Length: 328
Image (cartoon, rainbow, N blue to C red; front, side):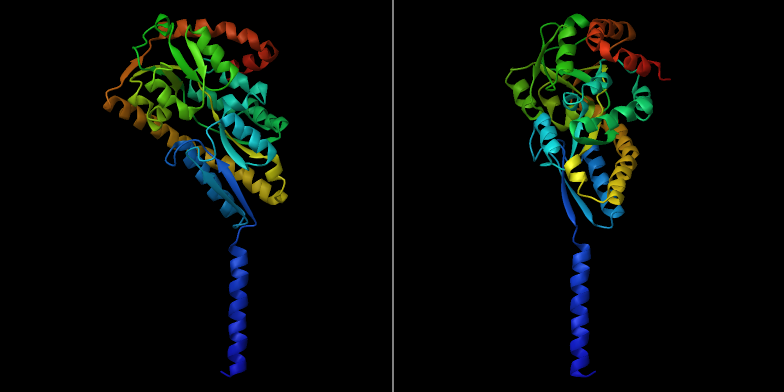
C-alpha cells in the first residue's frame, strides 16, 4: 500500500476511534442516592434500575448509585435536594417523603395492612399507582415502590411481651409526625433522629432502641447494642424510587419512557432479594444470640387497638383508608 493509502487508512482508523469514544460516552451522568450499603436489597434494586436504564438508552444515560449514605444521612434533606435537581434520583423511605405529599401517610398507618401480600395488592393496584403519580405535586416523579418488609421494635433493656412493656421506653423514629404519634400511642417515647446516629445513641443510652425491619437491624449493626427484638409488624413502610422532575426533563420523551419502564422492571428483582434477605437476617440475629419475641394474636390486637385513635387524625383520607382495607 502506498504512503498516501496508509495515511488515509490511519486517518480513517483515528476518526472511527473518535466516533466510537463519543458514542460510548454518556450524554447524561446522573446521581442516585441510597442510604444503605451495597449488598442491601434496595441498593441492589437501585443498581439493577441503573443498569436497565443504561442498556435501554444504549449508553446515553448513565446513573451512578451512591450508597451507604455517601451523599448524606438525612433523607428529608435528600428529598429537598432532589426537588431542586441537585440530586437526580433517590431511593427514599415513604415516611419522610410523606411530609411533602401528605396522602402518602395513609400507606404508613400502623396495622393498615393484613400482611405483605395485602400491601403489594394495594401498591401495585389503582390506589398505590394513583398515589405514586401524585408525588409530582412535590416536583418529583414517583418511579416505583420497593419492598421494606414490616417494621418491628427492638431495644437494649428488656423483652417486650405486652403493650405494658413498651411504657417508658425511648425509641428512635424516622423524622416524621406519623411514626412519632404511633410510638406515643403505644405508650413509649419517640425520638426522631437520622439513621446514622442510632447505633451510638443506643450505645450511650440516649435512646433505648429503635424500630425497623430485619435487614436494617443487621446491616446497621443495631443487633450489637439492642438484643431484644419484638416481631409486632406495626407498620409496613414501602421504599420509593423517585426522580427529580428537573433532571428527567433533560431527557427525550423516549429516554424518559426507558427510565419509567426500567424502574417498573426492577421491582420484582428487588422484592425477591428482599424476601431472601429477611430470612437470612432473622437467622443471623438468632445466631448472634438476640432474643426474638413473637407476639400472639391477642397481644397484637391490643397493639392495634392502642393506635386506632390515630386514624381520626386522617379524617380527610377516610375514604382512602376504607378502600385500602377493602382490597382483597
